[in-house]
Length: 229
Image (tube, rainbow, N blue to C red):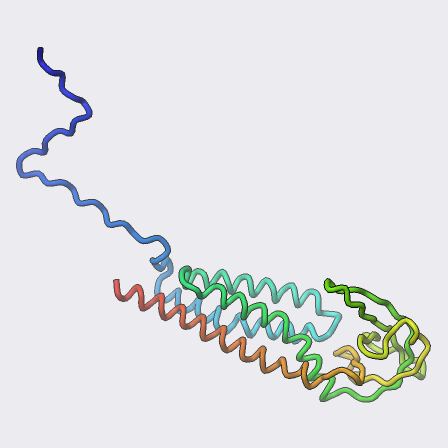
């Protein structure tokens, strides 16, 4: 009895015909999707323009009237910068240091610049405490915020302070604060360590420089990796 041909059995190749070579497997995440010129331009935007925009927006946020919108815009700029950095270099350990530096750029500049403004421009001003409100942080620590006005009755821009000497029993008392004559930055108590808070400007500057170095280093490695292929 003749055997039926197995349909699944591969047919022999014709004489002189060779098998088509299998396509080389591409390693995921290793290829640069952007052209070299685009990588360089993206690196310039992410490494230089992004930290300048973030610090500039947070400098405007030293005025409480602009703090909320400027902070939101700074967060959006940081998110766009992280996405741009991922486009430049999607592999390796570059993302987590970038996120850490971005958080430092968001947290430090506003308080540090306020301290610098008050330390250099603030004048002693006699004020009366008109109200006091308490609040608890996540650790359960109670902090007080006091409303103030000038001793002569004139209103004070951003008339509130937080710090030593502000409590529920301090309403009606007269004290001295450091106030910005132009009314841009909020007042500060004399007990605030302005020199320590103002030193954050140098930390923010160092974070911006490290961000730029990280971005350009990632772009250089990406371009160098493509050149070796």
